[in-house]
Length: 110
Image (cartoon, rainbow, N blue to C red; front, side):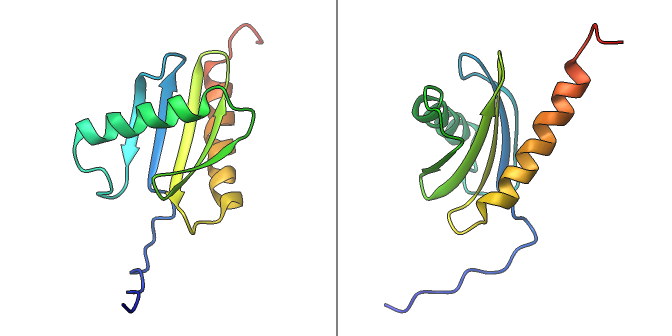
């Protein structure tokens, strides 16, 4: 079988997910139809959390997708891209998101 080339896309990020420290969704935005139903999305989010919340690394390959993640005390941020996506680009998106949220949620430093 001849592999079919993947259609080029402007979307490098397939999803951005923010979970609480129990793995429950606080925010999720999916930019394609990899997981079209909410049930599939929640199952994928539970899978991400169960596979990564005890890990010291910041990257995982899950279900054929690249997942970069970062956690704080009670927030767990994930950026998801295709398996062929550049991890450094996904990490740059993650760091920007994480730093912005940290800046907005910080208090008492004024």
